[in-house]
Image (cartoon, rainbow, N blue to C red; front, side):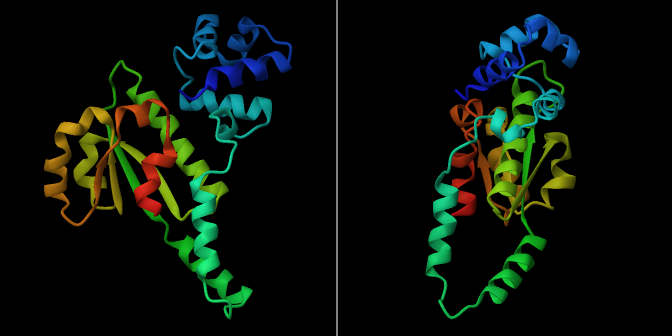
Length: 203
């Protein structure tokens, strides 16, 4: 499990704040902060951004994404295979052109449920976009309720489904036959394991 709670506790203690003081600043209950620090629940997206701004660190750092992964090695290997006669100007032009048209990942889930799914989805998309930005990976991720599948699905280059929508995979594949559809595994979803989720997409 991503140890977000340990990071929140570390940051709070670095400011010599009590759980109650942090809770008051974030406009939540002390019990909520206690649950975060014990990894029993997680802050929502708005609260995550508040924490990021207050402690002056990226949301990526709070989420535990502080080390190099297969993304970095993947893209460095691809760079190494490029022809040596390409000068830096050509490479920069290609990169700029590529980043103008990022691959669009659209993630669908069920909103309005009193479960952790909606909160996890927000954290997951935040982490995807942070990794993409920090490592110049040409993807962008957005999340919508499955009720918008007809409207937003056709805009996607790749469709991801939260675990609770596993039953709808074949129907969605039939609806969008030219767009890859993947159901996120429960373990990957619970661990916010963006690297494994996106492995097939960026490979």
